[in-house]
Length: 362
Ligand code: PLP
Image (cartoon, rainbow, N blue to C red; front, side, top):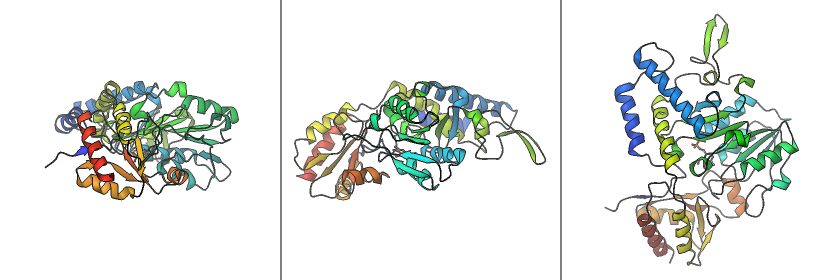
């Protein structure tokens, strides 16, 4: 049987042996709950948590107290909504670049929403940034695959409203580019572990000023003392982490961060594939040349059919709307075919898939 060729890193990145081994080692040799014990094992888990939190902080140019462990980007965005609790007088700027995880939590609050204008290349139009109380910024669309100029956009949003609260969805950006939380000056940044080679179930919420917010979740681990109905909150960031954290996944996240920093996906593979496929007149590209994601449509073929045919030949790609219906509406297509690579993909795989696509669309 032919080996599977997995070209769907943007949906979820394959896990390296080092990440898998670190999780197995944790489960087999070091497992205990954190923050609730004084035995050697429990202290070891506390040390592991501290060390991974510090690694995440270094990874995004932040401090230890800014880093909250979540379940992923979707969870992080919903947590920001819970922390801010916008009412219907609050104006939230969204954009068609947003994944449903970035826009729907705000839409569902009933807050006023505006769509921030983009230029013809689907980049934020910095000269026409919308006024907003909350500005949601998708740093890289999961369909277009281009890194936005986050720092300049945030500066422009603050020029429009110095009190704006900026929330960055860095789920795709973090795979390819360095986040610089201090330089960006965002209030919140969210991303998922599984898109950078860690396991599912763990993500990061960066909070610039954690002392300014009351926790949105209550329970064990986020309080120091409880006396009847009175309680004293734990320090930041732990006060935002009620309940038991995904410890095994956090252990793996530490290793995944080291991997991705040293070895980012080689997006020149996508440029090469694009150059090859551009010889086929029936292929229309949606993502621009040089993007970190290759999205396209095929004239006369539904994207689901193309996906099924590729799947039947052991090629895993993503097709459809990818939880990003707004950008597909703006593009005027019902769905796209998306190819994305991890550091594990090879030129041999890309050549095989080019040949298969040529055969399918001929
Ligand atoms: N935002 C973007 C840009 C994404 O690409 C994704 C996942 O595809 C998400 C948010 C949601 O991430 P998760 O499902 O890990 O919460």
